[in-house]
Image (tube, rainbow, N blue to C red; front, side, top):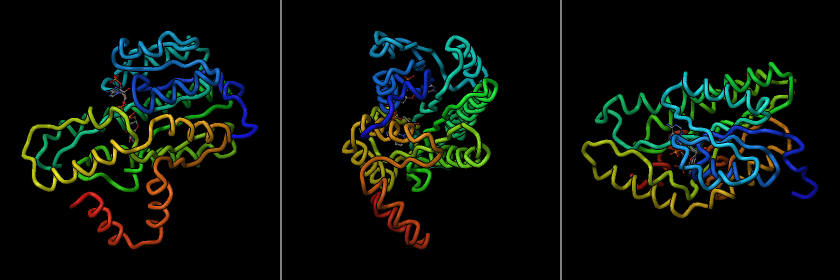
Amino acid sequence: MPNSPRLSSLYRTAFVTGASTGLGRAFAGMLLDEGVQVWGTARQLTRLDGLAGKPGFYPVALDLKDGAAAERIFVEAAKQAGGFDLVINNAGYGAFGDFAATDFAVWREQLEVMLINTARLAHAALRDLRARGTAGALVNISSLAAEFPLPFQSAYNMTKAGLTALNESLMIETTGTPIVILDVRPGDYRTDFEGSVMRPEGETTAAMTRAWGAFTRMMQTGPAPEHAAQALRRALCKRRSGTVRCGRIFQAIIAPLLARFAPLTLKRRIQARYFDL
Ligand SMILES: NC(=O)c1ccc[n+]([C@@H]2O[C@H](COP(=O)([O-])OP(=O)(O)OC[C@H]3O[C@@H](n4cnc5c(N)ncnc54)[C@H](OP(=O)(O)O)[C@@H]3O)[C@@H](O)[C@H]2O)c1
């Protein structure tokens, strides 16, 4: 972006969950290149070895399965950093299965990790910003799935729609304050996500096989994560709350635009076609 500021002039410190691979790794790398100090998380510290040598990077072990522990770890890191000017709630995973045929514990755990405990970190982040009375940004990584649900990933869709609703709520609540809320909705990106999707045991129907095939094809041919990091960088430079859709032009621009004008029944039919259903 011509004449865009270096991000370190706007954000001194950042906390990024899920910084070991994929989008989180690209966000952390972009911020470090911009001179921002980054506290990046993974469940195991060894997963952060690739970033650990970089100046200004602080590795943090954090598992979102335990919300109370995750909050304690965040607060400790914030003390060490002197507060976070930017928090990116990025960590997440997929779980693929028929809703009724899959043990409910699978869905419940995903809701806890990706919605409840992620919202808990958002809560802690905003308290920290408010207590310091400083300008800053909270970024919750939602997904295009908040608008176009992925078949057989029902809890994933719920978590992303929930996060988007939280982001929208916070954008209204923070009106007139120096706090920026970004609702980032990536389309399909080429990350480790597809490889780490949980496939709980159970019957795989022909429809599930077709949907899985379409899903993996789209992920494998998506843009590299650095593309999303640049979209985030541009949004952060603006210092304005809002929605950031990124990815292929069809997913990020054309489909959401068409969906706004199409009747819901038509939208659902086209979406089913997209997934070979
Ligand atoms: N890739 C896409 O196309 C796409 C599209 C839309 C939205 N997104 C969203 O973008 C975010 C990043 O996804 P990605 O594609 O970059 O996936 P990824 O490459 O699989 O990375 C996921 C990250 O989340 C962390 N993580 C997973 N489970 C965790 C848990 N229980 N507690 C703490 N950290 C955990 C992983 O850390 P470990 O090292 O501990 O495994 C890893 O760093 C997710 O929220 C995803 O839903 C991705």
